[in-house]
Amino acid sequence: MPHPCCAPTRPAGAAPGELPAGPAAAGPPSLLCLTGGTFLMGTDDEEGLPADGEGPVRQVELPPFRMAATAVNNEEFAAFVEATGYVTEAERFGFSFVFEAFLGPRARRSCPAVAAAPWWRGVPGACWKSPEGPGSTVAARQDHPVVHVSWRDARAYCAWSGTRLPTEAEWEYAARGGLTQRRYPWGDELTPGGRPLCNIWPGDDFPHIAGEEAGDVGTAPVRSYEENGYGLYNVVGNVWEWCADWFSAEFHGRGPRKDPKGPPAGTARVMRGGSYLCHASYCNRYRVAARSANTPDSSTGNIGFRVARGID
Image 1 (tube, rainbow, N blue to C red):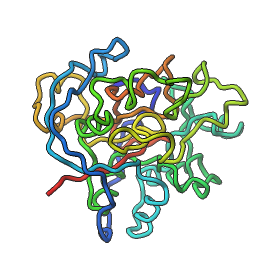
Image 2 (cartoon, one colour):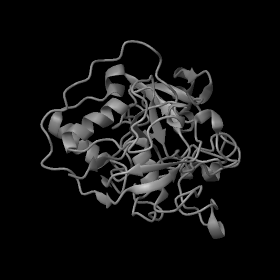
Image 3 (cartoon, helix red, strand yellow):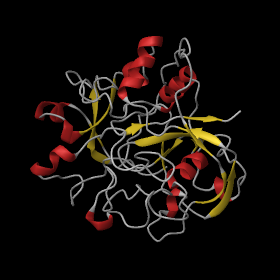
Image 4 (cartoon, rainbow, N blue to C red):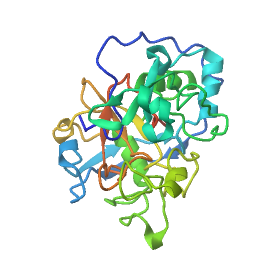
């Protein structure tokens, strides 16, 4: 599984049981209709990470499907919680992982660091509605992507909203926006004309940041920057997005090419798109072919999700 720079893994142990999602929403949200067809998935680009299983490039065929233009935001997730009484895994575990730059000196001293990625701290009380721990709030971030949600939390939201998580193949097809084998949803150049087109780490020395740049770190509203060719926003950067598939670095090399759904079993679920903490110097995973993974019960301040749906 990819190293924990992007999103640390919850320690092994008994996970709290899943809670029922409660009554279904009045109807599924409005989603973009994508025609499907064949596309070239994966990459053999020199910037690719072979250990993550980004290659080989292969032709994949998908049926038509629907995909949300944006990641689920805090307002939408709050409606789900209010309607169902759902309690997220971070709330039931009693903690979640927070980037240390968001914490005050006392919390930095008292909250344990992740050994392999000490810029992550396990913060008691951190959850989707208190993303930096007790006393923090999402009141001013209603249009930001919900974070501190596990794969199971995302699936519970989908059950309520009449949707599902996208497969990894659907996610990449949608993220490419109709372009063939480009690094980013808009082309091969990260900042064409010096113009930033995604929310990634702003400094030159991850995880350190200059004072004047500190305000640029963190989530951005879900409709920030320009949409891609299919009308999707922030498919790279901002927050990692859960996919339906189990993660494997090898399975797709021999697996199905028609509507693939990943390996039949595993220990971690696929995440796509990178986040506001990605940087070329350490985690160059904000490319459309890049992959990462985490255990289904893990939650951090840079993992969210968007929803999809089949077409009857």
